[in-house]
Length: 220
Image 1 (cartoon, rainbow, N blue to C red):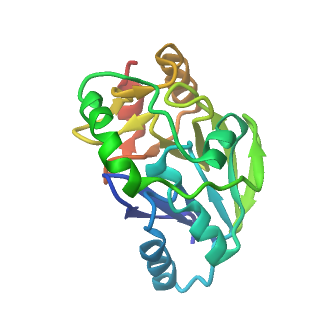
Image 2: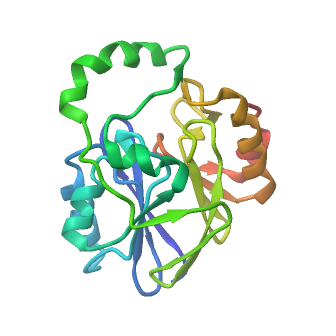
């Protein structure tokens, strides 16, 4: 069967990914709070009884907002890079230094925060760069790509990368433009992913995957 990737819209332009292997399924990110039902519906449509693993690319509410609920409902462990684990466990999450159109969202946050605040969740496993994960008959590798948040990480499976918000496909392929904990770290993280050379990259926002050729053309 090989690797099958199923993309799901999960609130505020966010995309989450069910990665189907021979024996089970890995979930990359969980979307905004209260999106667990649509993820589980898709899982049932694949005739899969449950999840093997929930990988969180970074601790922002549009990526880990439904993690606590999905862990309760499926029993799947939640894993994240250790540098973002405390933010996910505490709840309120910083947007970092905001640029461009991101300032509009920053201005709206006090109004929308009560409705999008994620349930805090403590990770079942803290990850490091280069760590190997197994689930669903798949072998995945963690690539630490900080900048957007301190613990932002990609998940690599075969020649496919799941890049979170290091990259975006909204309005075409580009590197993170609006929110970063450390803007100076983004070029190094981009080059690190480019050096791996994936042929497809699934981003945190944008319905279509980025091609490997488009990734190589990007500049931070």
